[in-house]
Image 1 (cartoon, one colour):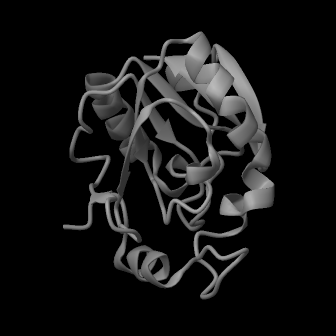
Image 2: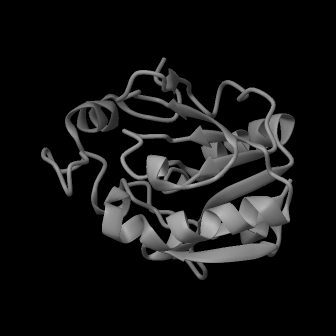
Length: 176
């Protein structure tokens, strides 16, 4: 069972979203060094402010940008289709992540339908105190025919306690 993804989505992930590399990453424009510069710079202060010492990255991709974050956290990467040694395969809608202070789920929930988003959030609450996730204010209604659905998480999580401007969205912090 593929869980949150269909077979076509998994094939595209294995090959790269656009079938090639963008700035050395098959994960798309949102994972380039340029598009992640602001969050790389802001994350160290954010984790310090909230005492976050451990992070499970739910959607680690190829870890192209995350290694540029200079932070003192215990980081573990997870993905449905691991692209790098050390990233653990997991379906975030079926399996809870290990205990951690925060789950990082950047540009992932946009690929899930509303039911699976709720399942993932339920499992994140079992693992972590905080969630850092992509937040799209005033996102359009879910469209099952679209592989990319910007998601406004505020109806499910309330207002975030902090935001970092990100590629086409904010990386928002919620207490779970």
